[in-house]
Length: 470
Image (tube, rainbow, N blue to C red; front, side, top):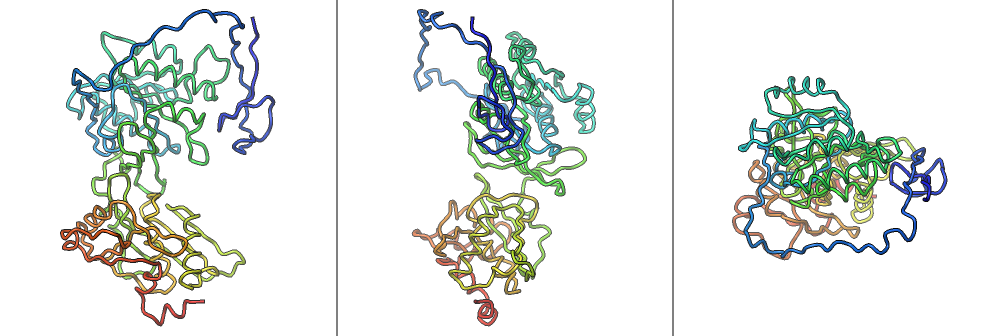
């Protein structure tokens, strides 16, 4: 029999090396390489004559017209992000910073599906590897969910968990594992949280869940960079990957879908952290703009699109003279590299002097915007802050800016303008498209089409803009 061997695995990226090193050559992480024992393989020649069992194939079309029912929790923001509810047999991975509210959200979802708010009662199991049962009960009592019919357990052994949920007489419909980094399989000689334990534990639980039609939700820890800790293969194994985002100084929390086999990606759900737990925000645009002050230079309204939801947010810019050799660039809620690109385009294509100034950019409300349609609103906010002239209060902006200064089209402009009109905005500065907008859209809102970033600078009076040029 061959003996077990040792290997050294990076706990951040999963790279395997033959010896220990202080720095991983794949992801450049320090002190992330740990020793793991690789189980002995079967000797050569054993089992090579054994044939595999033939598998059965099925047609793509379902002849029985089976109804693929989802588990709808009744929490609309959560159901929106998952694509309309939880699919039986699916695996969901949710990650987020410590204390952001992952356990609180999942406890509310489990209690809703157990019969509190959902139309159909489901058997729901909540297994915590980090807290005792009494600690989970204390949170449920604080949230007013003590009467929900949810089964609790504090366990970390995957073997025990599978034996407990593998019940055909009283099947489990929803299983929550909080968290996957605390689970272990006793046949692997490594500590919980290592790459081998996380990968194998998730694989065994997912295999049982798909065989029994159980919807399982894993809670995942994140690294200091905000990525889900452990092997990247874990995100490939599950059907849906959700990130719970938000700043602790803000009461808003964003549940974002980055992968979903059963619904749209980049869909978001907006929650507000309150004393009674996470409360849904049905109209986030009105909430994000509720504290916006008119007549202030450097403020522009962006008509963004997150998944299938249009959302209006305020882009705030502050440009101030700098006494340092390298002026500061501080960005909250947007990509700093994209800000550097917009600043370079404004200097090269419009002749504005921005390089000698400190620039601060903020997406108000604690939300993060990822789409390039924010380029036009950022450029408008920067020019407004530099000139000291406020933008029109009833105008929204959206559009992508290229390196040549051209304004490019973005997806779903009609949907963005409908949302803007609904919230009382009368004018929209948008990219010029090949197709004309529908008459109903033109009746709702005045459309100003921009072809170049210079059109943004022309929104201001000539004297002030002339003084800003190099």
